[in-house]
Image 1 (cartoon, rainbow, N blue to C red):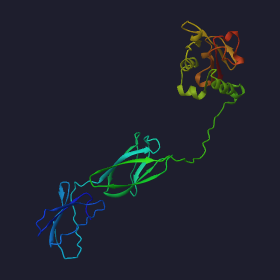
Image 2 (cartoon, rainbow, N blue to C red; image 1 turned 120 degrees about the horizontal axis):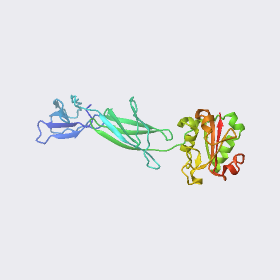
Image 3 (tube, rainbow, N blue to C red; image 1 turned 90 degrees about the horizontal axis):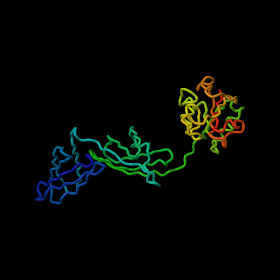
Image 4 (spheres, rainbow, N blue to C red; image 1 turned 120 degrees about the vertical axis):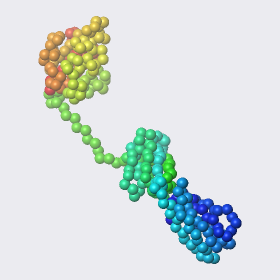
Length: 293
């Protein structure tokens, strides 16, 4: 057995021929046919800058001799595997695919370009295994040489994956359900008639006040709950403000409702989109409707 990729040199002792140079295959073996006139030969192996000790071998007609040459050096390095995993149908890179060599403990994931690198792979023939959810698993034969990098481009075939059904549970505030908030939200978002926010939306942004939250989330509104699109003034056309269905006077909202107390907000920016229960001549600039949890 020899290092794959090593060069074996054979010099016949009694034949006036140049030395024979042969490269060892991936299985570490090399077969040589001896000249019929040779009785003895000197053999040695080279691997990079390293050489084995010489071996002098005598030959008998019709006989087979097996010789072991070992290259002993700390500079001999294992091989490396690198490559790219692609979608076999689209040629798009496949990220987070698990790549490993069968029988070895190391597994690496492909990056966003589908590339991977496996180091410290012993020389020889191996099975490269690639797995990714949504694709059929693949086993790909590769040959690794000592101190060399073997490159591979692998195509994964998409395949349907059966998964357990996903169940999403939405928790509704009973009080808002009774007041019709969720029904108006459903149809309002479907038809584009207004803006609707739940307690989860408010908690996510953690505003200092309800008015500042509305001004931040609804284009064209002001910190004083005015509608800029309905007025040329800086503060905007005053919008009607309702708290739990009761009409408030301008500036009263911050004293009655803090952000953490609010369960739902409805914002209508014009009379055409207003729900009937919040319409009227005093809501010509739109309305902001707040519901306490």
